[in-house]
Amino acid sequence: MMNDDDVKLPFMRAWLRRDTKQYPTPAFLWQDEAQFFILGCAGGASRDNAFAQVARSSRICTVFITQNILNIAEALGENTPGAHTKSLLGNFALKVFHQQTTWIRTPTRLNYSGRS
Image 1 (cartoon, helix red, strand yellow):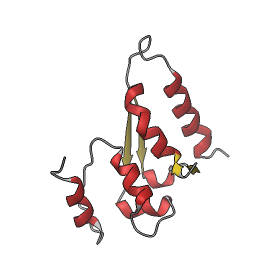
Image 2 (cartoon, helix red, strand yellow):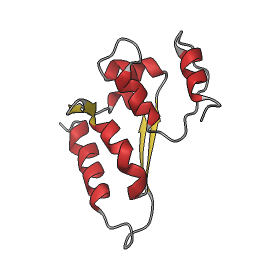
Image 3 (cartoon, one colour):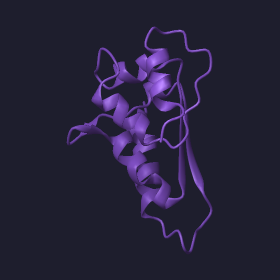
């Protein structure tokens, strides 16, 4: 049986290695219910966070879709959105919030909206 590491990690490594001058076509990593696909920690940060930090320079768009931010926090081993969750979300250039119903939604969304 395959797990997330069998598909996602080789994709991430291969696309980060490619020559973007020779192969400039953008790629994307689309993850619906993303909390189920978050890779474990490597040196304190999740592998997804490390990937998100450099993905744009390799012409890769990372899309995380989840029901709420608390799902991401839980997948990263946090009870509430803490440093790991905020660091991961901070690496995404665009954040879209639709019908968030969790108690944490308003302050978190406001922290990401309208500020530079």
